[in-house]
Image 1: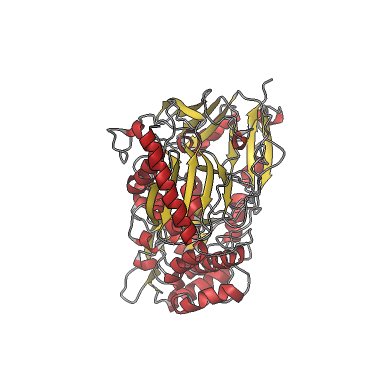
Image 2 (image 1 turned 90 degrees about the horizontal axis):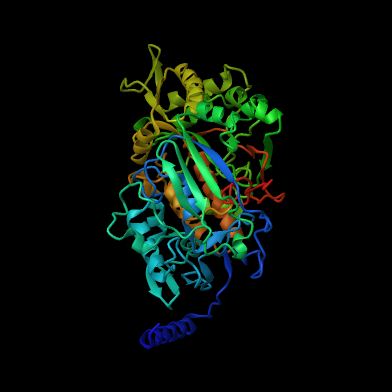
Length: 602
């Protein structure tokens, strides 16, 4: 660094320090940050609580994926990139401890600091941080990454960046992000943005999909790959961060491989043959009845059930309310009653999986069973006229007797459809203008086809014409990105720390803006207001009330015909693969497999 450069940073630091004294208390750099309160792990922590710092290095693990990939850029809408590129090759300024609701610790950044109102956040990079080509991670890389992702990346990056009012380099290795409004989560979100090497993208259109191998700073580099067949990630022996406390016991495999298969049936045959060495079963019925093949009975493969304490999330048939046929909440409620959950769950899952009663069920963030009370009711009352009439009252999903007829709920469905102006005329459900009630269920997974057919059979009893269409993943992704469907099977995995991503999931901009996850086209002012309340909550109590109110709005809005959820993971793995006895609160989730697993060197 030159004398002029040193003088520049000294003057700038003095100015910023003076501004800080003027505006309030001076913040202190810290090893981590939490959504509320302090991070659970101290500055001198040895490793993550669910990692084994003495885990041996070496070996390989093979996962099985259905579908294909045609891109190695996981940050843009165009193309389909393997999951592993983003998770193994690239790193962020801060990284999560999945045993806490939302706490981050320094990764590329050695420290983080923020003001008491969190209207800014400052990161100081580790001097040893390097990309895989040996180039140092710089502030210039950080700023370029943030701006490029916001302008050319997936919509979720632009959502948070819209609140960044200014970016200031405050030192050779430090950078400050100033926000246009207070947001408790935004400093954490910025800390989780992937950092790319600016020079690696010189002369390349970032928004265009390609199979060019990108450089990252993470523990793995892309090895061999063949689109449609496989991709491998090799552990980088020169990885700069291998000795960080955060990384002790992580990234143990020499090779992580993802094999791709045309459908789930072919993949399962590869599992039985031992080609795939780590596999998650999603069907408890199959788990109970289809895992007595030789590799299991001989002990070559091991079965494990891993519990978790995270929210259920939501999966099910999604109504596209942009379509006039689904605009009336009474129609959607009728079709929810027509879904014979108890019978279908028994048929598909042996009846063992619980139903997702709301988006945050299975957690403390879930709406209450009875009427909205206390602070939750206060938050909802200003919007009561824009919500279904029972939104503030007791609400529960319909329950059938488990028989094939579902008679009571079908009668309720017919009555609600009539109230909404739909009546049976010559065996066909029509509105007052004589237009038949007709729609299509768009599918890309054959596993959901049987569920869709059972549902369609029930709807036909009401006089509704239902078509199911199974398309390839490329066509499916293109259509859902522009909301070109009547109904799909959608899924949202939700965490114990919901934040800015909720705008991507249910924000009003997603009604017309392509590429969001507002698949249902939810468009009610209560959602935006409650997300804002959640993000600006001063403490845990206010945050919890806002999320419970949001959960109630989404659930009573009848946007989805809810399916079930797994309250545990069913994992089959090779006997030589191991994990620590302590499992994080999130269970089998991001950051656990393959990160903390290892292969027995024997």
